[in-house]
Image 1 (tube, rainbow, N blue to C red):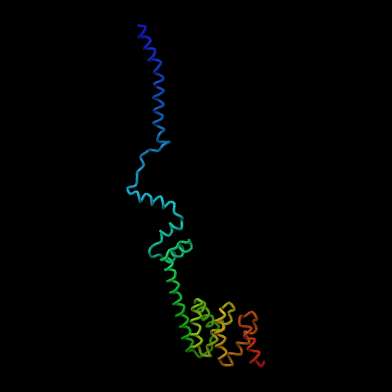
Image 2 (cartoon, rainbow, N blue to C red; image 1 turned 180 degrees about the horizontal axis):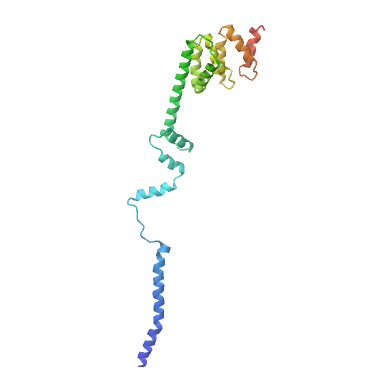
Length: 221
């Protein structure tokens, strides 16, 4: 009887300890996913594609933008790519093609104006001179240099005044101004002398010294 009583006492004393152990284990099972993850992450079907997805997140914005540019980008996309620093040959090509096309139209416009003026007999007005200057300004410097001679060779004396706004533009390239002036020196006196005298009034004009020197020699007034 003494042994049986002792065993019962041991069992009673062990029950609270056993319950505590069970509780600790249960809490540990519940907290494991929180601290260590669920352990059930899906691996990508393709390990390479998974690496690309990670790399995509780490790419600089400019590089990602480059990847996003279409194979045949629009002009707007090309400009955005260019401004963002993206080196994209196809985008740049679109911009270059658009510029070349615009220059071809500008040259055609200039030649058309010259051809039309060549047939006129009445002196041109200010409006026509403004039209010529606007058409001339639409061309690049290289195309201006190539096409100013087209006008100088074809325009008769009666229409030479359409070039005056170009000639009096102090910001125009010196070689272009000089070409117009040299041509004017071979025109009729009624065109040449008033033009030289008017240019001489502006000492800030790039041609002033040359004009002043010429008038010192040929102007009797």
